[in-house]
Image (cartoon, rainbow, N blue to C red; front, side, top):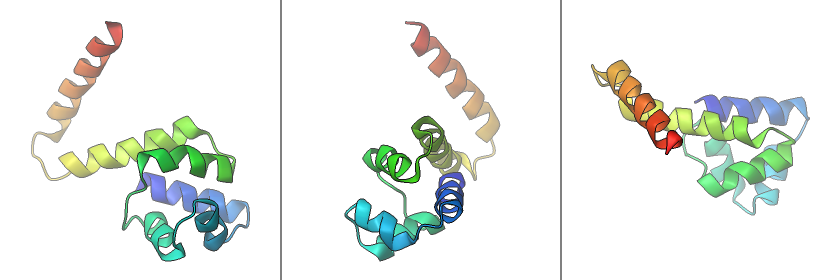
Length: 97
């Protein structure tokens, strides 16, 4: 829950209330609270909005959000590290094209 921890840390450092963030995102406060607790995943399109509201680096937040998703998928797999290595090679290959 890297993303959830980071946005909570940023919000608290700016002394903002969850209801201010949820209102800016046009979402129910309870839903935003679940995102910040890691009980619900933010949508991809909300990442840049959250970054703007919290004056954070959107690439950092996107990286943490993606890392959470990858970790969730491979967490219980015995070949998780090998799968990540293969995926990394595939990403490098596709970026070179």
